[in-house]
Image 1 (cartoon, rainbow, N blue to C red):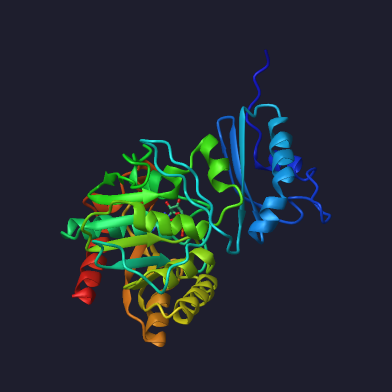
Image 2 (image 1 turned 90 degrees about the vertical axis):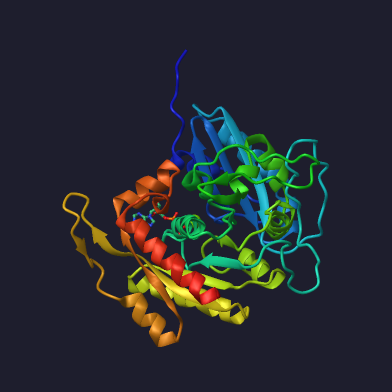
Length: 365
Ligand SMILES: Nc1ncnc2c1ncn2[C@@H]1O[C@H](COP(=O)(O)OP(=O)(O)O)[C@@H](O)[C@H]1O
Ligand SMILES: [Mg+2]
């Protein structure tokens, strides 16, 4: 028997080009494919429609997309989910006992922003674009705050690319004794939950079919047993979409921490994020500059490769607090990939996070 390798992203996208859409064009041309993940024969992705109605109408397309990818040599399992941008009526999935509840579909109608029982402060960790180190900062800041004695929670709200399970080294599915409450794992002193821990393989398609993500976020905020927390950090998806809107409108936030890199382009994106938080009347607690300097892994020399103090100046110009700068360091990435955030170790980067945590605690007291 011939054993084939799992196809790569390009081959999968090529197959999806053959999946035509009712209104003309194909899945790739119309740019509806999101969050493609390929892992040892398993392929998962999301088809994102504009509205829940449109998503439901795409069910036959979803099936054809699944079949097209399954037909590729080397593919063992395919799971394709449908999502939508805009609000939908909520539906209910019956939970099986002991299993975490299925993430519900739809924007949950609640009046005004609410607090989360036991949680003193909610911080949103945002940025204008992906890859600036939002998740890295969220994980490390959470750990650093916990090391300073705060009771800290971390909620990974990045639907398209949940990264906290990897960064915090957590993989087990949280339990739910009654199918309603979710018992979160604790890692490095931080109570954490990630959409990535609840959406798994075969469940994924079921949970995501026709769904709205806002309901899922609300559910994680309120059904997870956070206990008493001094702070809950929410690791946001990039940009200024529905999740940001839901979080800022539905919950009383202490404020947002915006992560930027020194490059101008990133700053422009960051400005968009800042503006969005302002529009949503969420106070910006401060800017963080990530990948400020480069620490040479060989000699330890620190260099401002992108120029010096760009984000600090921008913060000053905007009258916003500057929470600190974090170096670009191989150690940070390796730690993130290895499930032990660098802030949990003893190192100069951990010191930088400690200073940032202290500054934040000071600002809040
Ligand atoms: N200061 C840093 N030094 C080195 N690598 C970093 C640093 N910050 C982030 N990274 C790496 O960059 C990648 C993207 O970071 P991530 O935190 O996932 O960004 P985002 O959440 O904004 O998309 C990850 O591989 C991460 O390990
Ligand atoms: Mg992220």
